Image 1: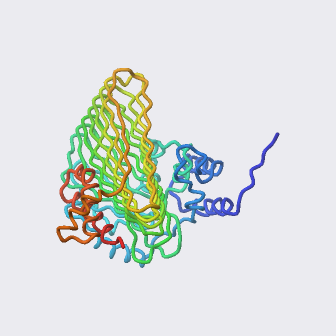
Image 2: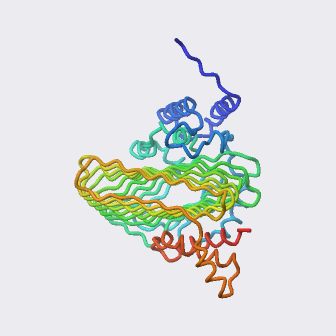
Image 3: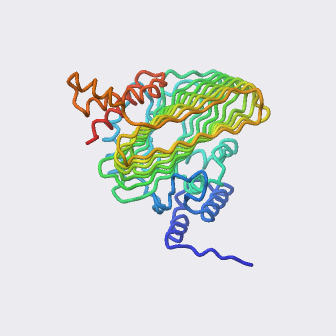
Length: 441
């Protein structure tokens, strides 16, 4: 029996948008074919929904409803808005790399006088140059995930960063994603970070909106390859517009005796999902992932992590904190798989949620799949409210109810924030949390 799938108006509009956008998308030949195949994969699946286990708590058909058309390339006015926004999000001591409405902005970026061993190029430049090795890494994502497939088809620009073997950088790299458009549109970016052997770097990612940018969609993906004996510290801050959507994905591969320390905080966007696949490809490596959701109103934020222990003698730690107020909804899904050859694995996961109202919701879903017998693995999850006795104690000493709550919330998320090694970046995360606390009614 032949089955014909009828396209909805939304589906037809997106197909038309892909056809129109193809001339703007970098790459030809095989790259164009890979884009087409990825878009076909997305069209067959459509937006993820609750009947898919990995998307059980984040039904994009209900939350996001449709994919907006591709944002236009930034003009002079957009770049001016972006420059003004950068002044509000400047981080001391970092090298800034700026993406405006999904397009690399060299005039706003700091690409001159690069340290020895550091290479920075735009995604467009790499895809059009025909570097087969880099291109294969950029297309490393599994397009069976519909949102990854869509990003593969529509990625417009990004940054490609290479740190040579033996290079330990003292200056963090700060990738700033800025949305400027007042008209609803979608932004598609993809970046790559490669660390050679015995290398080290700190990467910061910020998602922000210029004044007037509201109901946009940010679709981002990041590929990270960490070489043997190398270390990456990664800080990710999502402060998008309150009406925006942010769907981001990451693929991380660690070599032998590598160290990956990552922290993420989501306080912006109406709907967000961060999904990361972290694979241990070499023995003796360690991963520390720390995350915080600070949500209010009707915000929905989903963090989904897949830790793939495939080799022996590796360790992973996951610490996640969620604070949900009003009718906000926080989701954490953590899956640890220990494959048969991954003996001596040490993996632990802990997630805690703090609900500030009766209508707030937190779903925590830890999973362990263990196929080796000589391992140490565990997980835990708790959900609760602020301690009334501590609130009473603080208020009895002259603090208002809001000040007392803010103090306890800061202490609650502090464990995760303290994982940031760089003092300036830790202050950046604290400042983001304070802005959220001050905005509470």
